[in-house]
Image (cartoon, rainbow, N blue to C red; front, side, top):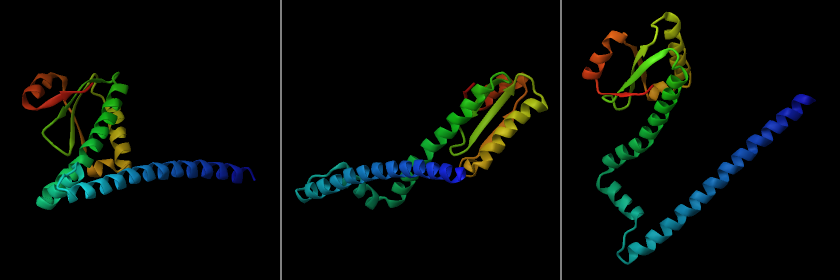
Length: 167
């Protein structure tokens, strides 16, 4: 009997969350509908809104518009993945000397890691994190690579790679 009550409570919380999202979607749709109506009225008198300009751009260059649309989705998501990884590095600063990220690969995240002590145990912490990311399937769309670099090569990395310091 207790399991039924817990399940019902969890279902209600889930339903409330879904209803909240539906409400936000409704508000967004109403805003978009107002924008569509306004754009339709203004184009009749020869004026263009941002919406009609965007539609015109898509009609003139559909492939370019699709690439721009995809980038507007991919880049913020990749930035979120990068921030999550950077947070992981900061949370494990006791084993990490420094981390660099290559900017050369646009849709892949390459990290060059110098450990304070390059041991199998320290490496396994990072490998476990990569494994966890892979389980989320985020690395299918946004591949993540870790390369361990001996500390004596730190200066050479800076000269050979375009990198950002993260840790």
